[in-house]
Image (cartoon, rainbow, N blue to C red; front, top):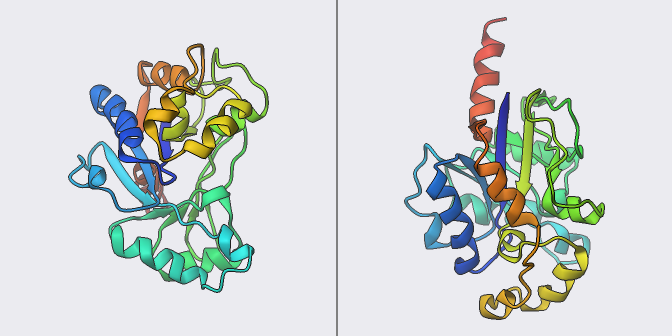
Length: 233
């Protein structure tokens, strides 16, 4: 059964992003990165291992910023023209946005989380954009108050798509309290280091997952497989 690791970059400094990329590079496990900004760390990555999608932030528009949603995505489109997929910050999505994603050439969106679901599947939408839900996220795991002994997923059956954030891997976050305490120093890796959890947390599970003998693929691989299967009928 297939497993997909996704990473929401979320504007982290290069040192924090580099920590996550190094862990992935050491194991060769493929993953899909959702990018929020330009950084040299994303240049020249092995395309067989790393897929880059975009991660626009529409939240300021809800708070009255006078900007069009399309302009938000266009900035990322210019930075990452080859991106096939999109996931909004805070998973914000609507039918209007789905149509916009289609018009801008995106093949899939991954905004719906179905926590701990055993029944993930790719869902074709009305405009042929594929909806790809995910069933685990580090932020939700500690928000539920779960421990970090395991991910509570069945990796022996069905599809699993998990989402990590570099800041939580760096902090080894295990609680909302730790993250909220560290958040004011988000752009200061030296200061953030002092908030690192020395017990079990997000990094613990990330490393454990990377060591598992699973069939890891990228989201674009799922899309390609779905398109091939659809052509048979």
